[in-house]
Length: 195
Image 1: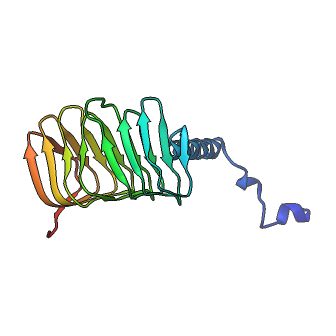
Image 2 (image 1 turned 180 degrees about the horizontal axis):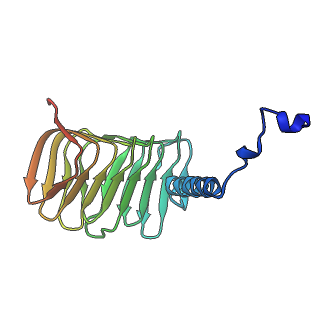
């Protein structure tokens, strides 16, 4: 036997099998898709500290990048707001237009919203995303969806109106819950907090 065959750092048994190659390919593909979901195919980026006001319309994707902080106002008239950093400004969803989509990715934070209504729009809070509302959070009716895989804190009233759907898979802290014909699903925790 030669020294190559006796080496403990390499053996022929360590050559990847087809099963291992499939696993590596899957992990690479999953990582690529995860990164694509994080960046949301942005058409406009906020990269630093910003105080500008934005209106997002159908076909546009406004992204608050990781490490960025937005203090201005964002009006949703369709389109997508993708939050990887911090949003501390005003947020308005135009219910007469609808079709807006807000996504808070892992590490993203919405903080400082006084009151917010979701009307004919969808909001997704991803794992480790945070949505803080210092007033009321209202799901206004049919076509209004909120999926929580992170943490939502509502210091006011959490309102679920007729036709609205809230899917809670993680944690929602609220002071008052009003079920006005809306639907609450999921196995996440619902915690009442003091006002």
